[in-house]
Amino acid sequence: MTRPAPRLPKSLVALSAVLGLVALAGRSMDHAAAQSYPVRPVTMIMPFAAGGPSDVIARIVADRMGVSLGQPVIVETVPSASGLVGVARAVRAAPDGYTLSLGTWPTHVLNGALFALPYDLRTDFAPVSLLASNPMLIVSRKDFPAKDLQDVIAWLKANPDQAMQGASGQGSSGHVAGTFFQAATGTRYRFVFYRSNMQQVQDLMAGRIDLMFDFPSSALPHIRAGEIKAYAVTDRERLTGAPEIPTTDEAGLPDFHLTGWHALFVPKGTPTAVIKILSAAVADALADPQVRKRLIDLGQEFYPPDQLGPQALAAYHKAEIEKWWPILKDAGIKIE
Image 1 (cartoon, one colour):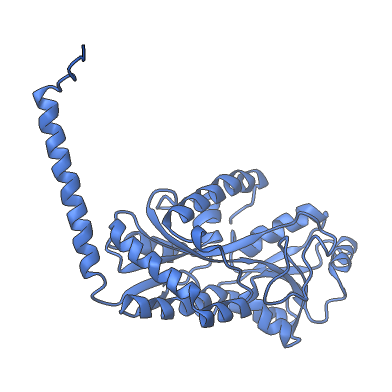
Image 2 (cartoon, one colour; image 1 turned 60 degrees about the vertical axis):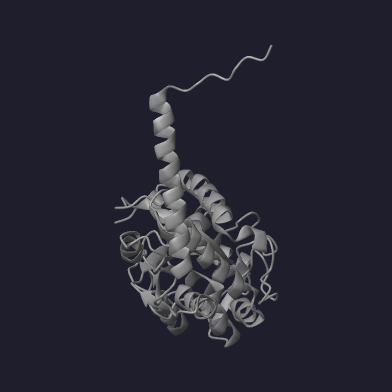
């Protein structure tokens, strides 16, 4: 004999009906938002100074996204040494898809371990898409007395506290990389902090500082022009766009790997359908051969297409936070 299914109390039946209507209304609003989106230009907040590596990458991607969206994507530079101001502005924007946050390893991972932030990097943003990854380059002024990375380390050990390394702000990727480099090599030197990446590159070319950890998009043009020297790339593989530069493993510093990345986020509460449209525009941009060539020339590496979208970025971002926050806190990096 078949037992009849238990009946829900009338109050729960009514509640279920209400919740069903709410969900249906939410989906209808989401669909309506996607049907009309976008009807005006979209702003991409880039939280560093104009002309730096992130700015160049943002403009390449934004220009091509605008083709797919049918509206221009305008890059707005909101500079601060660690990207805090620009990210704070983005998180306060209306969750309607018209404000994007260009996120990086420093702004959306490192800062959460190093600063008391007025926002939560884990919950106040919704992921859109990864863009590209970019390991760092260990570079020096062109007349630094070292022909390779082993010579750099030997010179630093023989001259403790004499060298100066540039970094675009305390807690920046260059500062973190330099701190871990000293720990890995048993060396000591001083940091010089700048308000922008461009300022430190200019001082490196002028010989006012000795070393930098810089991203390829900024460093490669000066390396190719003979204005600075490159010793290694902080990754397991050589750069596609600069295969002549050895990896840190090949240069005698095994397992010293630091890889940055760029991604797009929107404020939490942005309709899912709008996020899908933005993610598709990114995928279109990164599939464009001209865009890919320009980014490869800047030392960028690409993720597989199935690792670009919102879910993939959410998982990647979570993993990066879980990896780096304990490491940074244990390192005791001081922000003064």
